[in-house]
Length: 296
Image 1 (cartoon, rainbow, N blue to C red):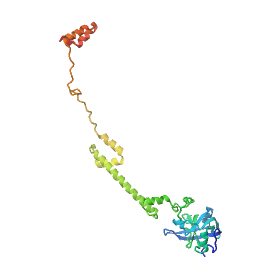
Image 2: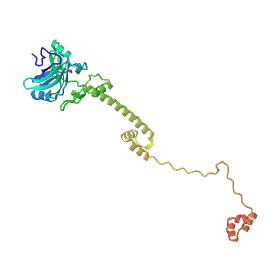
Image 3: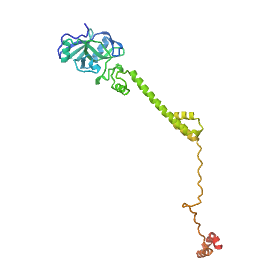
Image 4: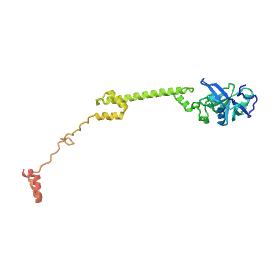
């Protein structure tokens, strides 16, 4: 008899002690086809019992782990470790679960738990009624409280909604591996880097063409600009000779384009009359300023 076989008689609501996992080492095949050994020793199963968080769902054929129905066949309300029988659970069956077991449509229990790197179970997540029991396995973690597994649980055992969204954005299938995601992201980054390099080459080419007269080799100028654009531009500008300041030409015409009018000169008589009208102290100065007119 299988150690985790269900009893022959069961009724809805009845709580019974059921052996979930015996002591021992069990080999299972994961969904990806890889074989793993589950080491269910006394220390590991005692740790699972201590970490139990009621209630735990018991579904049909692990449907909730495969994105299917979460309908309960039963609920595990208590869990303990027995040195002789291993991990024991108190099941409270639903009407459909009790009917399925009583009618012998399902005969076995299969646990789902987080395991450490050595394949030793850490915490019970769910159980399933099944006719093909397989101890252990890599669970699909969906519920809120299971997004953060207990200490020591490998991160890869969690279902990551962000990773699923990333696969969708990258055009990958939901079952794509992490290696596929990394490869797709790497290819995307390479394309972006190539586009950036082409843009930089075009800008460097334009800079070199606009400074052909600086005396530097065009290829060297391009490479220098790509390495340090601001410094290279400042250096090239320092080579340029300043343009000589423009001396404005002396204007010959006024703003209207006409020859400026010359100031009219006084007659000798007018000059003498003006000088005679001045006080004696000012006449000498006036004479010096208008001598040509007075003597003329």
